[in-house]
Image 1 (cartoon, rainbow, N blue to C red):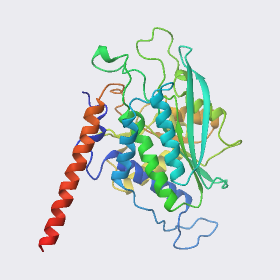
Image 2 (tube, rainbow, N blue to C red):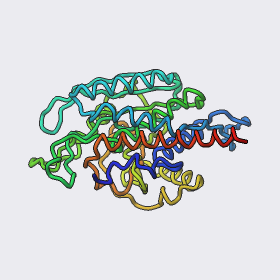
Image 3 (cartoon, helix red, strand yellow):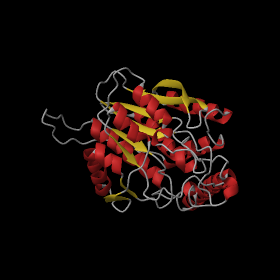
Image 4 (spheres, rainbow, N blue to C red):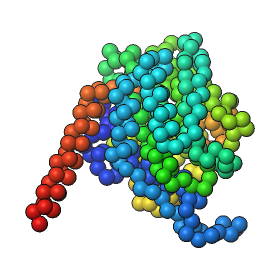
Length: 342
């Protein structure tokens, strides 16, 4: 087992896990940028306001990750992919979003026809002032970076690379349904991000082989003439000990958004996690959203992403989840017993 998908080990289930951090941080960003419930009225010059941000539930966010993992690898053209897509759409609907399923036939690097599905959950769809939150929900068909060459042509489970970002966004959706900001929010789950040419492919490698779902959405948005003030993409945010620096294309296209996000993280006490440095250039969904849709979008992605596309078994992942759940139940039982004694 590699450390690639150490999303749910015993240490990451503690209070300051990465997925919990992302849920809280994006929720804060959405509400503070959009207004939320204001304690005082503001002038047109933009006076400071107090924003009441609802509290996220760590267990809830983890459950959304586990539910995705339970389907197995979510590779386009598989029944597991179809089932997980239905689950994600139904969750967004249950959380009060107006859901748009964007189906598309996309051509992969090798000519394979992919039955793809972008899933969009919109809040306050009538509002012209919007922000967009992105994550990809598909998983890599090949573990082409696994230390064991025998695994190179087998699909990965994608607990971190896929499910973690989606899990954070689903928790945000649940909370936005309870207390909506004044501006519109679109939670956009992108498909076919991870079907880029594997390392063992002998043909020419091109960046457009990746992120097929975002390329399609950027050219064919779910709403004609769609625009957003800015976008934030989450990718692989569940890894233990992850450190985030300012990704290169994010700095090129949206330096002001990067600056605000990192400033907010530092103010919240996460300066050691969101470090003010160059994170390198990553071909990811945000690249095509910036280039094609021209929406200023940043990518929150860990610096050490070169260890990806390797295996962690489904059994190990789910067992750790269940062990932690039982551990918490025992702790709560002890607390209840102590209270009853007194």
